[in-house]
Image (cartoon, rainbow, N blue to C red):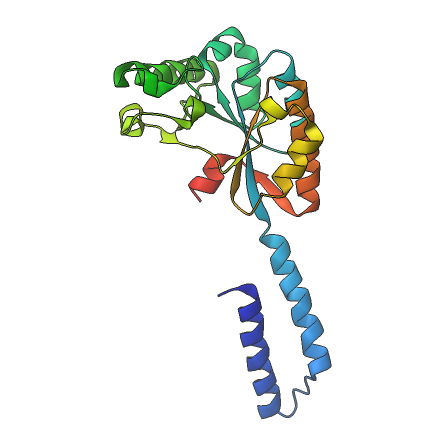
Length: 230
């Protein structure tokens, strides 16, 4: 039952009760304000959720700046890292996990997995998962193939859940934070998974501006597992 329907039903019950029990003396001017306040409180508890995701890192310069911005805003995000980047920057990879963000696999290299054999495509993911587990102590449950393309049945073979997106900010191409924010705000809705990157200054600026804008619209930032497994 939706919040509005629940309010209408309960309001009707109380009005009937008030008319049946003459001593109740609940006037309409008393009931409506009370239920309006209840509906507002319920609305605050049921905030809209969105998952902000970053591909291709970690980057030695821009990922650190992004992490600092996320921490200052008390926001957790999801990072789909490349194995070769995680291997080169293990401390940064570890920091991502320690600060409460979710780490997923983006393959060892940024290559279209469909151009590879199933065996090699799976190796791209499992090699990355092994690296991440060795650095953070936790094996990733989620993967995002580069370009969103993978072999059918690959999830079962690598034992990871594939996560794509419904909003591609095109931050890597636009390189314009204001435009990224404007176009994303026009598309976002409750449950959106937003694709961004952490390897450009404009992407970091756009992500932090977007967070500030979405918070004003009562959005709560969660990691993808909180959307998919809830």
